[in-house]
Length: 95
Length: 366
Image (cartoon, rainbow over all chains, first blue to last red; front, side, top):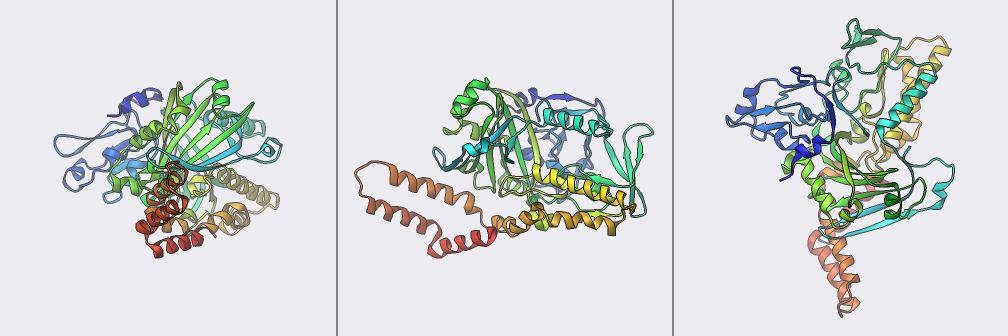
């Protein structure tokens, strides 16, 4: 099992507390309509996890701002995606 | 700038082996234009210094939230600062692969998973002397390795290794549509790549200091959106200007940005407004440059790769096995070895399959 936390731990972030820049528009859609839940394996920061109720929970703290979740949710368009507020998000040390 | 590239290696991996080619030349040590490895954080700092020196104003830590429009005409940008509206004669959209601003304004649609690759990478730090000795280079000479084969699990994609001054960047990217189908996490591929017997020794002893992910627009020529309109132009990744075959993107981005800027300068000098008919000069200049010429050359390739995944699975395996069969010293005669190799190709792809593949590759790259 790969510990993604160990990778993300090397990164520098300024988290915009309480203001996640990505949101699941309608969590019920993940439960009822989405069979693949591709975001739960495709997100390179593992921000999306399956929950016990058959839905998906999103924690944006480790987000790498790539856009994968938005693009991969093509059937349901259920990811409300924007860049973090100015000065927040991942701060690349090297890029 | 980290290193100028004097050697490029292309490796086709099987599970335990690779077959490849190198090109290395001392001529790359001249002042001629070349390929360089850079790290974006220091590069961007240097580049914004150049912008400031040229009289530009760089506003950092500010996110543009939307374009300000008057009907169809773009007249500025809205930012997330208080009173952060900025008006302009023309806006050059260079907001990267996701290009939400152009999407919001309806200049182009959402990216399709089959037209973007998801790449993940890590940077591993090693002493400068270790990088030099490990890659047989001196001073600021650099090596890049492009890698295809087993590490992508048959998905359309490649891996890469770049030497920096005191570090090595290692990454792997595949089409997002393929990730979706395969159900594999991108960092799983990265870990397998790092553990491959051809890669692991190159990283040994290094310290991983950053992990990043990025989408790369790989739809090619057919996925390039409208490039200009009233009061706006679009450049770089946001316009999908990436040559996936040659792993070029930064140079297309910089060239398109320069051509957009030169278009504005020329119009200003002629006292012409930045309307769509006048900004058409930007597209003409791009069409006339290597940017569009190269994209056009490979315009069929994305579709051919989508329909023929065996280029990334069957062939790497066959090539490696062929090399192994020929090179192992085991008492078998070479005629029999050749027969075994021919047999393995025909068995996997059939004779017509081989001919068809050759034709498809020719058509995709001619």
